[in-house]
Structure formats: structure tokens, C-alpha cells
Length: 241
Image 1 (cartoon, rainbow, N blue to C red):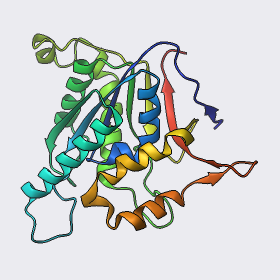
Image 2 (spheres, rainbow, N blue to C red):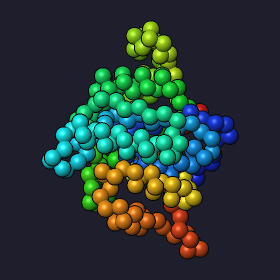
Image 3 (tube, rainbow, N blue to C red):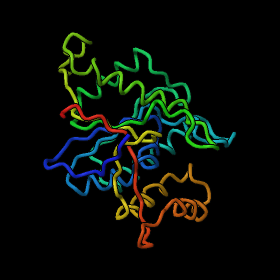
């Protein structure tokens, strides 16, 4: 599969990022989100769960975990300049791409009417040699793709949504982050520090902030001139060409 370099769109876009957990947007594509916002695009977040299992501290209740994670994700989104943030009530760890969740996502697509829809790659089972990709990540990617076509754009799907004013909408592109089969690279070297600061707002998730920053900086690569560079990879489906 050939890999292209991202070329900015010539017109402003509405971009909807739908992922499973608070912190997924910043971890998966925080640099790209920052770049898109700097280019004048409107980026919206819809998070399918509230991250109620995102802790190993047995003294915390799910409600306390949710409160922390909503606060952290809100702070990170505000820092990046995200236009809107919405949380759904699906339970963390139990997300499945069933028909009810698909309807939720169709509703989101019809509500926000994005040209660009962003999720993660449902085919990425093994993130690398040391990790299994979280099943919620894969479920989120699958349900977003299933909702985007054919349900979101076809008036005969979910007539009750049409009656509620959520009219059919077809996206121009789907971008899948966290992929092992990228076909587009986005140079976000100039947005690395912004991404890092947004990630550090997820205090409950990163552990020791100094060790975390060192680990994230170790992900940087060097170009042929010895300069550090940072790119984010996506699998993009473009319905307009």
C-alpha cells in the first residue's frame, strides 16, 4: 500500500473524532488534531465511554474515575481548541459494535454533519509485539465505519432519527488512526509539544509525568539531516475521488 503525505484541504472542514475513551484522541492523533485546528478546521470530539475502568486504584468508585476522566479530557480538548466535546454512556471495556451503538453513531454523524470522520482501525488487533489493542478501540472503529456507510447517509435507515430532525449525511473521508496499514502520513513535528502538553493533562492515566515525558520524547525519530521529526499515520478512505 502506497503512503501519501497529507496535503492540507483548500477549504475549511468540519471534523468529527469518534473514539472509545477519554485520552484516545490525544494519544492516537493529538498532533494532527492540533495541526488541523491551526489550519482553521473545526474539530469535534465524541467519546463513546466515560472511561469508568481507567484506574487500578481499588479505593476509587467508577463515579470518581468518570469525574476525573471527564475533567481531564475536557481540559485537554480546551487546551487544543476543540470546538465541542460529547461523552456517551456506554460502559468502558464492554463496548461492542452492535445495532444500538451503531444507531448512536449514526445520530452523531447526522448531528455534526462532518466532512471528515475520524476513528481508529478495527483491524489492528496487535498494536505491537508487547501489546494487544484494547477491544474497545477495535469496537469503536468498527461501529463508526458501519454507521458511516450505509446508515448515516440513507434516508431509509432510522426513520425515527429523520423525524427528530437528524437528516441523512454522507461524509467525504474516513481517517483511521492506530493502524498497521497506513496510507497517509501527517507531519506534526511542529505540533509535538502541544500534543505532549495535552497528554499531560490526563493526569490519572500517565503515571509519573517526568518518566512519561521522557518516554513520549523517545518516540521521536530523526530525518536524514539529523533533525527530530514526528509523524502520525492513518488509513484514509476518500469517497470523493
